[in-house]
Image 1 (spheres, helix red, strand yellow):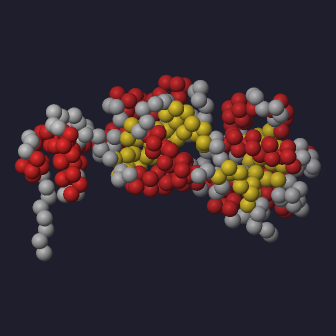
Image 2 (cartoon, rainbow, N blue to C red):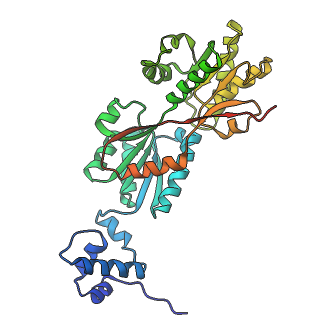
Image 3 (tube, rainbow, N blue to C red):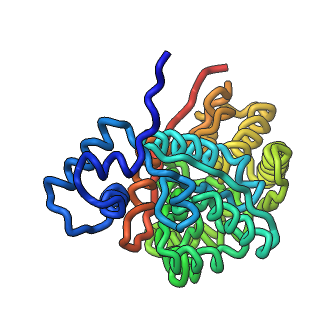
Length: 347
């Protein structure tokens, strides 16, 4: 069997009658003194011969590459189903656009994280997607901007006025969970549910819910509806159990004080499942007597026999927007609003 040899820049030079350096500049998208017809002839041959520039040379010389790094801020973020779903969609979308991908998980040490970034750069990454706010991200982003690489953040900050956005990550997409909370409040209002509770850690409630509520007509009474729950620091799947247990115990205590609660909003589906299962054991009709709301449309919520209202993001569409934002030179802060979904598989 005969194999055709790999084409070189000299082959282009002979066919087109121009220098090797001119061929190289055309193939790498740089300006030359060549005519438009000569330029098109070089590009046509590249398509005909399926020519790919030497990636090793491009990496060594710091030239642009079709290699992207997706960086998780810490190990804990890799267990969040929303992050995993957007990660998979980003891989699919980048692959469609003929991009190779590396991934990395950052640590609690800023210097170690910077070295991880440098290793990704040495491997040829010239575009970077950050999921979450990694420790030391400021130094990394400063280096990326100085090198004129592409970058975008996902949930690097939840506040467009935060220092991280103003000073460093000026290109950020945020999954707007707070919008879902206020959509639930509107749903409660339509259904006449006034004795509801919001389960959230104090820092989450004061840092993300109350600022959003400033212009909301029913916001003045939200603080008295809040039930504090522990912030989960488990780095792995044990965190799901911890959320489930803490929410169940919290709502049990709340029902001892007031058994007429008719709605509960939780910041994760696992908190919502803990609430729903306690209510079921207590003889309450979940979804009718008490509407239980979670977040992120996880697999657990979708297949729960107890009806959970949750919210969903169109990850395929969002991934396309993120890739567009990755190569966009303009600064932006985009809140991605979810749609509400009610899962009711019956008992």
